[in-house]
Image (cartoon, rainbow, N blue to C red; front, side, top):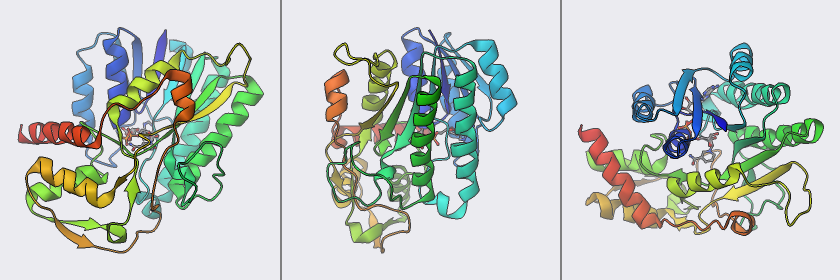
Length: 325
Ligand SMILES: NC(=O)c1ccc[n+]([C@@H]2O[C@H](COP(=O)([O-])OP(=O)(O)OC[C@H]3O[C@@H](n4cnc5c(N)ncnc54)[C@H](O)[C@@H]3O)[C@@H](O)[C@H]2O)c1
């Protein structure tokens, strides 16, 4: 088994690479090391991965079709896990073409590479943002998802449609994963739990959007990567019946947390009150996310094990250690 992880220097890619490589699985990681957030953090994650002999890394942009094709021809991957993307909802308002490049052009390059160099399984990252401002909770993969409220969400929905067509046309077994607000150590500086922590520690004010009336189904990173590991070899036939080679799962915590409760938990673990500035809703944001995870429960016995209290404590512990060094 040889696995390609794209976006391996990113938050989820790093944790997944570490989990798989520590279990002796051969992992090739690629990443463009873009400057969306400090490259230092990406390099430090890669530095952590150096200790694993079964992990190797190349700086490759998935938009570079030629480089990707050469890599696939040389390495002959059994599984590909595509996590490389331009993430973030708010940035897609300012930099729409970054999303078109990495999330659409890059994604078709990955699909084409899998078409030309057959793999046993392609897993790719989608997002809870495809549910837009749906009021049907919890969000189920059977719900309609044709009203995205950001370009980021529109590119993730496009990925799902593109992947479905390639699974159908070329019989490539493909699994799409709709992640719900993933957080934890080595996380993403653009996300609220990270930037709030930085600001609270410095005594700067935090911006609380929609007057604090929001809910997120925060999902701890270990729960996410443990589930992905189980999915790698999960057969496509269910109860002996051959399914089509395409499936889509929510991976969330199934326990939405109110924004103000989340801030209180951060304050408790940091040991300091936040200075809050209450602001209206931001363009592109959604009010609530809440994952129905019954499919994943049924298929891999998925039960998120980490409470927001424990997960945020792990994050704060990591943050204070990382930035004190
Ligand atoms: N973290 C979350 O809460 C969350 C939620 C929903 C979906 N997702 C999706 O999960 C995936 C991983 O997210 P993350 O939180 O680890 O983000 P991240 O930004 O930390 O990781 C993405 C990595 O991909 C790399 N990358 C971007 N464009 C690339 C390109 N064209 N070629 C090669 N590498 C490229 C970046 O340098 C980065 O290291 C993304 O697809 C993201 O959209 C994440």
